[in-house]
Length: 214
Image: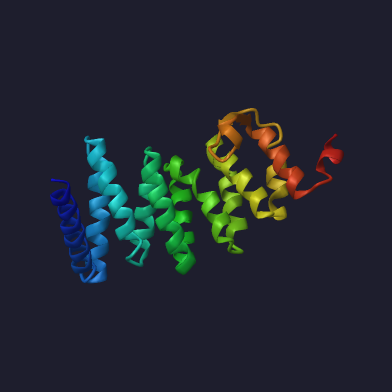
């Protein structure tokens, strides 16, 4: 019985690869529309297990199709509340950003303009740090001005990680911000206020800041 199960897995994997290869032969524009529609359908499903399975697979497929629609779709998947789905989308989006950074940057700008994908917007600053392109600074400045505290906190941490001293003035404006936040990137998931994170970030960007404000 175990051997039969193993063979079934091999057969399923073989069919999956063949189906994926055939799907990717679809003309790019039609394929992008198909995948974007599939993301919309998956997001709308009431069956969360099915939705998560589809979104994880779609993240991988979208990453293989260049174009603005797919960058937008990946950010939409990144906005899912299931961490496993966000990890899949984040890794896929990072792969795309290494090859097509301008395309991803424009998709991030569109997401910032909309302002509604808060979970994705709290992840994207760290993606910008990973890629490390020069335009990360201006984009992070926009994140710092977002009304959601978790998005601002993520941008503050990312600016410090990136060593983007040009953002120190924007971060200084946050020193009196008493909103509480918890970021996975903080040690042990501990909480802090936006102002406390801003002070820590400034201490990394300008080592003398504690003396100046003390």
